[in-house]
Image (cartoon, rainbow, N blue to C red; front, top):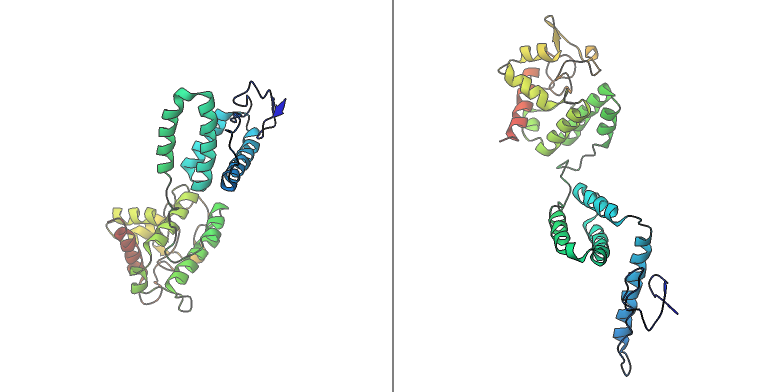
Length: 276
């Protein structure tokens, strides 16, 4: 009796052509006067690769389930392209041993899935801004801290921390990718209640009337303009109540040289520019 060099299964040398366990070719090497060093090295590399793959595959109890899992991981882009392709090739090898008639269809499906993997993840910042802290604050419902951090992000990107406000030129040149990321994070963690897009829609419905906008989003109540400290910091706040990007002290006052209405109009205009 001999042992398979890959999985170690015993077999009868005269009778076996392929290992009944792992499928390794057990056919004796053709007789040669003296195999070259290159040939022996290639065979050794091939054998080591097969052993490694078999060790990994041995832990998988259900090949079909593993195949479906890999397909899902492909769709989500959760595993690097090169790694997942090598894993899929091994699964394909096993499937080929079990179901040869389905291999052509499987190859076609895998080719489509692999081709659909994006080459890179979508950009969230044009300037390398880290949004993890904002995401964490929004995720935990710390709305006021999230709003204050959003303002800090705006100033950092525009390099206006010392001034503490944004000029018209700062707003007009603000990176659209970052503006969209801020908007998407606010929308996502407020279930679509807060965000720049929500405010933009209300602005358009009021025909660009800032006073009416403030009445709608709760920045003005019974003709009284809200101070920042008087805002609502919960999910029951009016739609569009947050984030505050056009003013800081009071809704009727601007920040810097622009009025609150002028600031808001420019921010909304910058958002709209990205939709064209």
